[in-house]
Length: 220
Image (tube, rainbow, N blue to C red; front, side, top):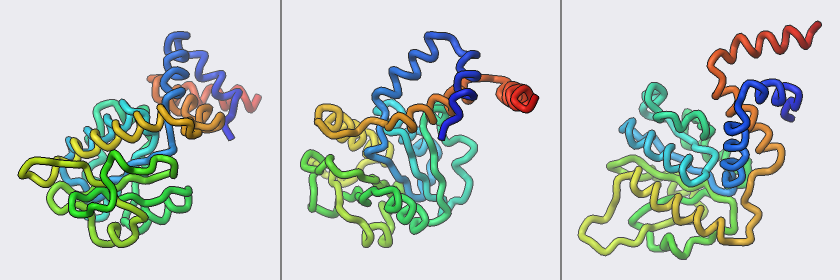
């Protein structure tokens, strides 16, 4: 549970406009959908997908670092990491198991499967949308464990898009449809409080000193 006293203390260092902005943005955030990326090699693609999550209101991004380790840590995003939660996993299976435990169905994006065009995708279920590597797409273990598939309709000669482009198209489509629906897609009260606390911490430059002072005063 979020420490409300601590939240109030930290938000005292923020302007009223900043706090109001947090509330307005959180009103449009969702955990109904989450995005997962498998071993994306190009740093700018990871950064771009994270920005798409942030812009279109997806709160969590899941990153599998099975092949390339911590390569993405240094340049994972250009500011968006302050506002989007990033969950890192060492293996595909760790990621799949964690997401299923949270109640998500696993949805694989692939141009080679005609089971569901993006426009026909059922948005009512909590879904984790998986995107694969730039050249090879998703690995077979994810494909085999997927509960469903999404395909972006294409009418040209090229059968695939850059991962950051694919992610932006999918995220924009499903979140736009979600907001037009009567699905209960918004963050819970506790999730909002938790994000307010995290965002307040990310907004305060000298957060370590301020935290130390808070807990020191609390002990007196």
